[in-house]
Structures are given as C-alpha cells and as structure tokens.
Length: 122
Image (cartoon, rainbow, N blue to C red):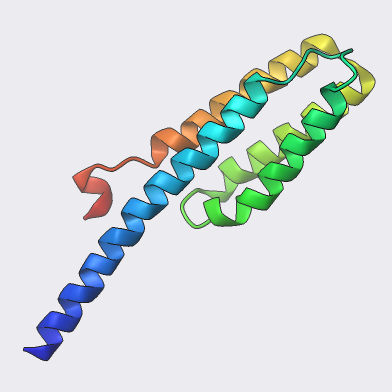
C-alpha cells in the first residue's frame, strides 16, 4: 500500500512539473516574441543594443527550454539571434526583417509544440 501512495505522489509531481513547464516555456517564448517584434528598424541607434539584449536573453533561457525542445529548433533560434545581431551591425534592412520574422516563427513553434493535451501528458 505504501508503494501505491509513493507512486501516486510521484505521478502527481510529474503532472505538476509538466504543467509548470508548459506555463514557463509559453511565458519565455511570449516574452521573446514580444521583444523581437518590438525591435526598432535597422538604422535606429538602439537597434544593435536591443538585438544583442535579445540574443543574450535567449542564451540565458536556452538551457531551461532544452529540457522540452529539440536541439535542432534550439540551434535554429540561436543561429537566427546571431544573424539578427550581425544584420543590425552591418545595417542590412531586408535581411534583418526577414530574419526577425523567421525568429518569431521559430519561437511560435516552441510555444505551439509545448501544449497541454492528454496525448502529450500520457
């Protein structure tokens, strides 16, 4: 009987972690999407510094997201944030906007993949 209660407690802890993970990853991806959308256009004096802040923010959150997301998607987002910084530095307007859109789409994919559906939990 004790084993049953231990298993039940562990099961609820696992479900709790899944729910926590869902909300945390969605909050992280929403925050990064807002920051990417709010980046000023290339040529603005703050563009490069805000782009670098976005990149460093991603690097600090990457380890947490790596528990739930595939490495290919994480590497893609890392590459896109580095490209954004490069395009902001050389003031490549078209490439910057295209890369920003790709970054937002990749971050939206992370939020979409981290959903609370019964088949994801069980």
